[in-house]
Length: 155
Image (cartoon, rainbow, N blue to C red; front, side, top):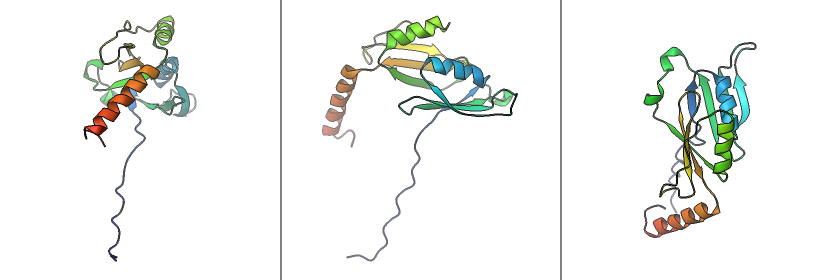
């Protein structure tokens, strides 16, 4: 039996939440509500435009918006982030976006998402990919994970 002290548990980060610099926080709130996000918290002086907001979905996915100052404004072409969302009702979500005046792409069925995928830009030009994800996709993914574990590619 050793009297050596146990090594401390390494510190870890988690609960990753993207924060997007936006022109108008309120406009982003309206758009992300179309995707199923609910407003959780806001910051800003009474009677002035919001400076910050946090939204989340029922499954715990979250996104934050920060009122961009001129030095943080980046053209859509230079934004290096794509938000990826999943739905079990892609056609209905696309119809909802179109009815609200948004311009999502047509539903495509690429090999990596045969049940369907579309792209849409938020009001600040951030790219959002929305994938159809149902029981068939989930079961196929679980099968792929098992194969990768058996091959030693993931723990």
